[in-house]
Length: 313
Image 1 (cartoon, rainbow, N blue to C red):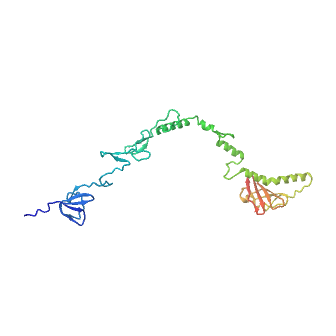
Image 2: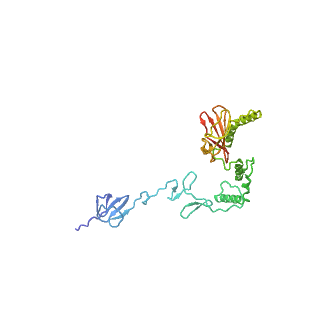
Image 3: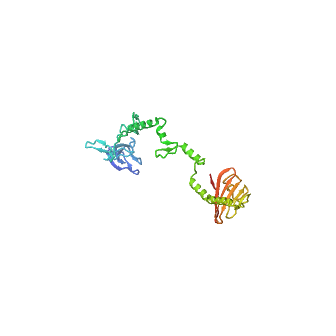
């Protein structure tokens, strides 16, 4: 009798590249069942119609790259008794499908959610109501802005600004008034950071306080014919600190005189005069002016030496 070959389908188990599978053998691979169409070895099962034929597709769970059973999560999706799957609606405390409010949001063709900017400007000013649609709120805001911008040359804002000094908490000083104030002070420009007119004036008063007394004494001496003009020098000196003890001393200085405001860089004028007061104690004060410069220059002397020149005015 002739050999008919293999005529019964057999189970070859899970696929192994080292096993030889005869024709009509079931081979299991990744949950699917394939039947060999000829004897194969080392050929990975696929539904190619030459080596294998897909006989039974598995019912495994689906993956991103493989079809299969999809299991509802019970949170955002659910299945009823008839096997019908549905999507749950979202709430403030649970995830689910969201339906945008037609007045506030719109959905693009690709499913993108966008804010609805199609609003109509309100005809009259009105208060914004809690829970009002965004389009309506924008319409009221637009009306408020338009009303403000249409005021007669911003009358409301102008009424809040004053060009004169007034004690009014509802008024703001204008730039014109600030400029006038700076000019009247005599500064010409705004105060630098840290500058203080009160401190400067107090220092001048302190430096010149004793000078007033000495000038008064000079007047008394002149009146009583006790005149001593020796301290009133009018010659140029080599050092501006040349002075007579217990006197108010006046000297002239030029660009060659040492320790002057010119040498210190406080003025670019090289000539002037300096008044020095000494009471015999180790504390002195000086007041100087430069020709062509309306400012005053002061400094103090102490056991530690002279301070730097201070410019006033």
